[in-house]
Length: 323
Image (cartoon, rainbow, N blue to C red; front, side, top):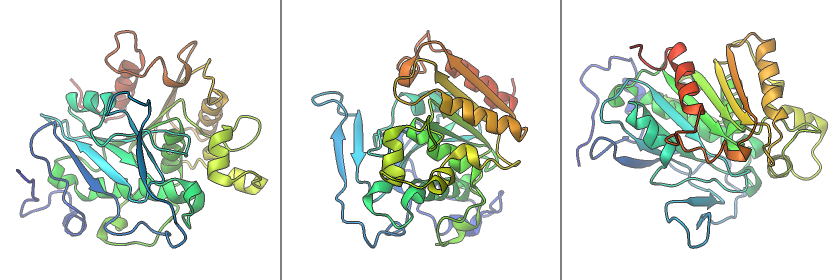
């Protein structure tokens, strides 16, 4: 197996951080590698008694279409492109905070991004209802650590640490929205030099996202998993992404369908309004139909409009090289 190693001179000034982070090695271009997010036990697991499970999302279906329950050891799946454009994308899948709809082999979206030159990462994360000390912040801990790991290995992976986009889907959109707005929140004690790096994404994309925990537009399943059955108004506000949008929030792309039967489209509207109030560069697309998947969300579907719209947004904000 060919392993990428940092050169003698770390051009991005991250040598110390890279020295303590597990190597993100690949056997070949467009290969897949899975690495743990935490070097040992994840933080705050003293009262966790669950056992991690992996299931098929559809019994007897595609063996790569899996979901993880009771995640105890979160990980990053990395897909490196044949020719890098110097940018990276961190993908945070959904699952209603009851499970994480993710595969160790990746899927259509990370393959599509890698074909365009992005180094693509897919994150599996811990679920807040499993007893973690951080409660609703457990997924955010994993996301903050994940983006730091990517930055810590930027020189080795030949990516620009200032060109990292985060894309979140459904409940993963809530994690991505909080990552983009709560980068100033220290959710865990530093472990190594990687934890000195910023957790702020360069740009953020939210797709049919869970955003608010407030009535009447909260997604009931996500609310119960994050905060329990009788959360206080203060707890609801604290976990609502639209309630905490600082002026430094990165440019944000939002896409959802008006006929979404799962997560009310008002979640997207609330986030857009909060971003606009802070004068954050924001682009939103609300489609008439598409449900809770924008019509299957296959980027190679000729009827899918969102891939071109997203790429135009990323190009405008310097994530995709011009030309």
